[in-house]
Length: 383
Image 1 (cartoon, rainbow, N blue to C red):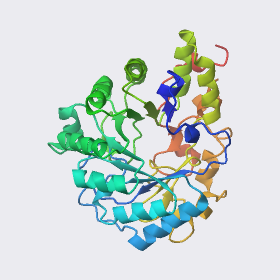
Image 2: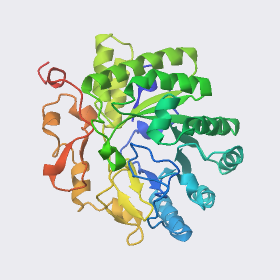
Image 3: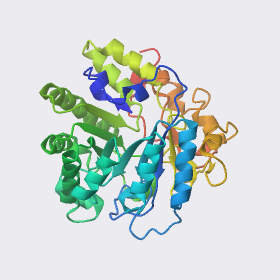
């Protein structure tokens, strides 16, 4: 994650200790995709979830075993995702169990299942944050979600969370077909009283593979990041946001620094220091994902390569297996990187977006995904 409000505006963020650690022994945040079921059928869903999904899910006892394993390993945060996690009948029981194990809980949801009663229960369970997905204005959102009325149901869910006192944020995935609505998302957030926004770069996994020409063009991405910067400055000045982040494309860090250098921005030195401390793309290190059936992945966007199953080996043992070829690449980016990254003067701050979309451990199948949008002149070591 690139914290725009922190780096560009100097606004302290709630999760800065995790994002900019003073040492590198921090344990991963775990995303638990606890169910493949979903009441929507989003065109860009990384897990291809829908109501008809009937894949095997961990039982309540097995899910509690997972919670025990990640708590014992020292992971700081457990993020319940899916599918739509609120379709899992024992979700509240699992959240309560995670609280007993001293885990901070986060919820990633489409928001449509959050009633006033549900929000009150989530608050009572100590939910620290609800990230709610939104794809743009009403017509765009409903088209992406393939359900009429989803936008209004999502706004209602946001309102119920805020009424219950739950810290709430928006999650917006930028595709070629909605990237023009970045400013609209800021407007929607302000109207809804939401003070945190995460802008995700599209990674073509799950159903997103089916999108034709789904990746934004480089110029579209640059324009979107410029809009995010301008809107963040404006909204920070108005006191209506506390965190604005971009997620999934670590080229955002160098791009931000180049902007700050060109502007002679007073925060450019501190921004560079914080980016160096966060150490770039740390997939397979700072974040882990566990599937509804117990399979462990390097992050939530790896769907075709399992590191192991928590029903067969404890999570900590799987995560520390240095013999795994994928973890070996992800944790040694200086030795394994995309050719463009090898030419880049910013590599140490970024570490690239090197990944395999088909899950292969063979480096011949790895690529820069999402693509780096910096020009050859910008990455040149002789610039």
